[in-house]
Length: 160
Image 1 (cartoon, helix red, strand yellow):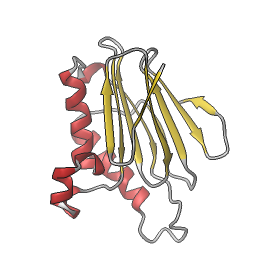
Image 2 (cartoon, rainbow, N blue to C red):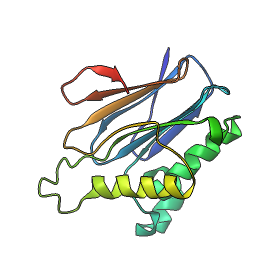
Image 3 (cartoon, one colour):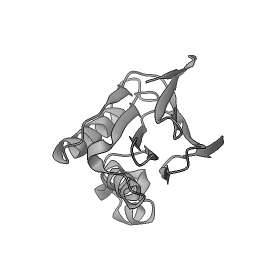
């Protein structure tokens, strides 16, 4: 089984059932995992910030950094490999308040809201999620089975 590591502001898609995508230490960032069980196509996005208007040049260079550019890119990349929006299973994790104890900047919450708004306006339902709170998460999607796993800080890897 090959591990495809998805870094911060990165995304990967694959149709290889031997692949397993993983992203580590999600704090305020969000991981969006999508999987089409019929086409056996999946993808994983690890975005950092809610809105690309913060830095248009950066968004052009690194679209996976932002919710509003990264999420559409993730879906479109899966469609190119044969995925169909109606069959896509969507699971999300992250959006914690880690370093911001007073919750002054609310990056995690803003990331969650940006994702929800985008999904809502595009009629995309979230099948499962583990968001918010104040701990890091690691997520993994197994393209052979389509299963999505999550490991919370100090915990065991478990299916979401």
